[in-house]
Every structure is written in C-alpha cells, then in structure tokens.
Figure 1: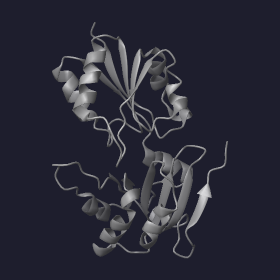
Figure 2: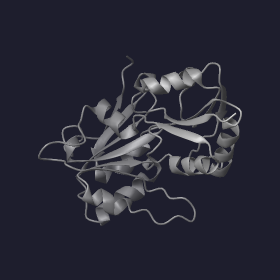
Figure 3: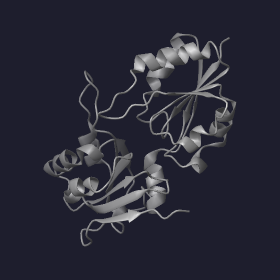
Figure 4: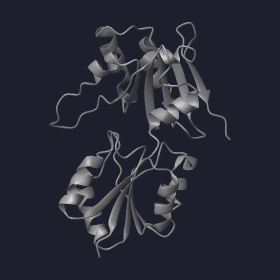
Length: 251
C-alpha cells in the first residue's frame, strides 16, 4: 500500500478553529502522529486512529526529526490516511519542509492542510488587528530560537523593521529579547502583550510595554505563549497602565 501523509494544522488549540478538511481527515485517519501541544479534544476527533506522540518542547525530551520522518514513511506504506498533526499552521515554524522533502524522496504522497497560527488567534482574542490603516502595514512572524549548527537568527533586524511583530517560542527568553530590542533602538515604551493558550478558555493575557517584557512573561504558566509588539496594541497595552493579568472567561 502507498497511502498519503497529510500535514494537518491543528490550529492554536480550540477545536472550533479546525478547518472542515482537517476534521474530516482526522475522522478518516488510521494513524495520527501529533505534537505535544495538541489538545485531547482535537485528538478525540480521530477515535479509530492509533495516536503517536512525537512532540517537541523546549528543554524537554523530544523525538528526533529524522525518526519522525521515517515513521511517517513507514506508516504510509501500511495505511491509506496518515495524519501528521501539527500545532498552529504546519508551514510556520513547524519543520514541515523537512518532512515534505523526506516523504517526496521516498515517493510518498504528501499534502498540507493549513491551520490557524497562534498570532492570528491572539489578535482575535485581543480584538486587535495586526495591521491598521495609517499605523501598521507590515507584520513579522519571528522566533529567536535556533537549533544546533544552524545559522544565526535575524529575528532582531526583522522585528525592528516591522510595524507589528509576533515572536514565537520566545516567552522563556523574554528578558534577553527585551534587552536586545531596546539596545538596538526600539523604544522601551513600545506596547507589548504576552498571551498564553490563545483561543482556549484558559487563555491568559498580560499587557504592558517592552521594558516590562520579562515581568509580563514571568506572570504566565508553562503553556504555549506568544509575544506581540507594536503600536496597534496601544489601546490594549499602555505605558500609563500597570501590567495586568486577564483570564479568559469560559464560553
């Protein structure tokens, strides 16, 4: 058998934000390889599938990418529908290209199903457009994190050049990120928001300024968190307001 591997975006966590195609493929899947942060409510949409956790989280034991690649190819030779379920969107900070390249080299069919990325879920939760006429015409999605042997990230220059910036996988480095940006010339009073578990009922948001970034991040737990910077947040995060913590009300 030669099945198809579907790289499916699980979105930021809320089941309702899955695409219809993602939900259908989960219902059809015979085996699902999923990230660590995919909620059980989403995995429950694939009741008949074998579920294999292959997630990666900073500072914790994780599955090597080469092993994931081989598992996907082996599964496709046994199953018709193989789902590789990735948090957010597969094509943004998800190492999808490595899996696509490996599967194609093995003559395995592969398709991508987009998902809602965390920055867009955060904007929806905040009720703030990341682009605004006359104020913000550019948005940067960056991460300061680099793997061993990889080239240095250009996240700093990118954030400085953008009107609005969403910094992925950076909450644990909030102190160094804030210091680097201020040292490079970004105003300490730049509005900043850190949001944890965007889209979920347990989402929490802390707001303030770039100078307070380390303090903001320290108030959150160990859930997936995103840093957003920019003038579009001025009415949400003001230097005249103390950093505050908001817990999302249950729907």
